[in-house]
Image (tube, rainbow, N blue to C red; front, side):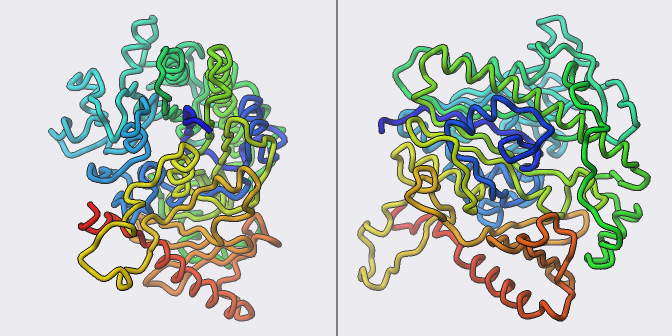
Length: 508
């Protein structure tokens, strides 16, 4: 197969079960169904950290947060690490980012804007930056959008003003009907929305005549909170038709004690409390989120139409993925934090390869660290340092044993049916400076285990019989053996995913 174009659609804070190809009966995403019809829907796709910057750094580098160093929001991705766009650029790809990046802090220390913090919100709002500097982590071109809804910024703002739009509409949106927290309705035509700017930027690169293949990161800030869809999407879904979030009476008795403090408002992760949120408000929150997802889907449709119009669709590898999910009312909680419930960690994950089987569903475990090796494999490009075991060394060859130089695995075999699995578990890290928790999780085909180091607390769920994670088995004496076995598996998996990276100096 000749080297394909690569187009990755990334969304922010979208749950896997908010996707129609995953079986959601309410949300309408016909253009994501177009991608699913051309490829494979991974029904067990996971992030490796349910927070924006660590998750995105894992997608870009193929490394867990402990190895790429971005463990929480506000830490910059190291410039000396190989990135997916950087590797492809080095092989002749033209690389472009449209929309959200979030690889360096939005709120750096005062005065630290350039050159190390070109995503600084203050620098853009004050006019210190007007054009995004490139190259940037392997991107040769960038059309930048930072922030979300009520605090959007970046190059999009000048684009909006040039078309007669007023950025103040984002700062002062209309309240939603029910008064749900962090939920609004946006007074802005959809053709002036930042999603249109992002899609137009992507289409412009697609339409450029060039013999070189392209790699485009088309990254929408939605449906991340604050929720604020423009019309008509704000009215597309009737809250009364939305099922309530997953929960059961008495489940807090079986969860780590910190969750009771969150639900009663004693702790407010991200400054937001679920106290007093009514069923009507949960439903409207989800309905407005669905509106944002359908809006993104419409702009993805415009991009897919451009690929068809230019004759490039059959030469383009398509991916749809999210950085993480959201609790969205499950178990009485809102947004994200140190949570490792499925709403936060399970993500949409669609991959379509030109000419390969379409309309397939795979239950194999995949995660974000598999994105880079999977894409490079399909492009015929080796992972950085892949030849280290064949290079001359100062040692006898027999004393240098093979070791995985990256923790991820290519998913190519899952796409063409030559493999049924590429891993037997997914490791998830979640460091939370507001609580001090450093939660480590293991997801297997049948269970999810989360440990809270330094405490006696944890979570253990049987995903086969309790997919909504309503019955925590961690404290149950009858499941002590299962718990111990999964803790051991977590240790094995955590050690096994330690990369040989950077590669040994004799191969540098």
